[in-house]
Image (cartoon, one colour):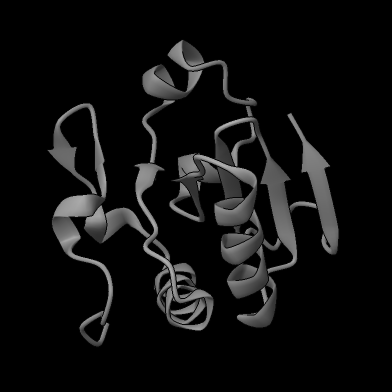
Length: 119
């Protein structure tokens, strides 16, 4: 994969282990594009997850995180939420989950498409 403009491999880890190599190249490319379009930094709080990690955080058994197709992005307030969402949608993401302090985004083609949900 080409070098990303806005993200470093160190930002993608699970349980203290770098998992950048487990991430979907499509996800990474679209995430980089979304970051540029949003004009605001993205802090990745969750990326690839092991089965154990997914269970411990209450993830769904078929979570896109298990396949490296998802990330969660920290979101501190409504303005940041708007800016991040705007970039994600402009970049073509069509699977977005909104939590109180994070936004989940994924490119998992085996899960329903064109959806936005809340936690």
